[in-house]
Each structure stands twice: as structure tokens, then as C-alpha cells.
Amino acid sequence: MTVSELAGAEWRKSSHSGAGNDCVELVVSRSGAAVRDSKKPESGHLAFADVEWAEFLGAVKGDLLCDR
Image (cartoon, rainbow, N blue to C red; front, side, top):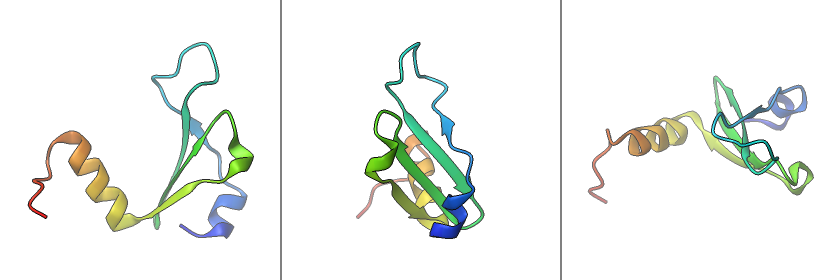
């Protein structure tokens, strides 16, 4: 995920967030994804390449065996 992709990105909040602002925000693009804290968006973000993001999602869904 590039800085230019984030410049005009529309961040989405987690669907599991409550009435407060205590959640993560996400941007997904063709080249990967970025995640940030919704309480402190100015504090930065974590960026993942498309392959890394796919592996993360696989692990969360239980599709990825951890053999490393």
C-alpha cells in the first residue's frame, strides 16, 4: 500500500465497533491494506502488502496452517 493510495482513501470502521469510537479503521486496495486506531488516526497506520494481507485473513478465518 502506497502513501498516495492512502492520501485519498476512505477509511472504514470495524462493523464490531460500539457506540463509542473504540475501534480500528481499515483501507483495502489492490496493493494491500492499512489499519489504524480510530481514536488516534494521526498516530499512523500499519500497512500490509497484498500477499501479507491475504495470509492474515487466511489465518483469521482458520484457512492457514501455522507450520513456520
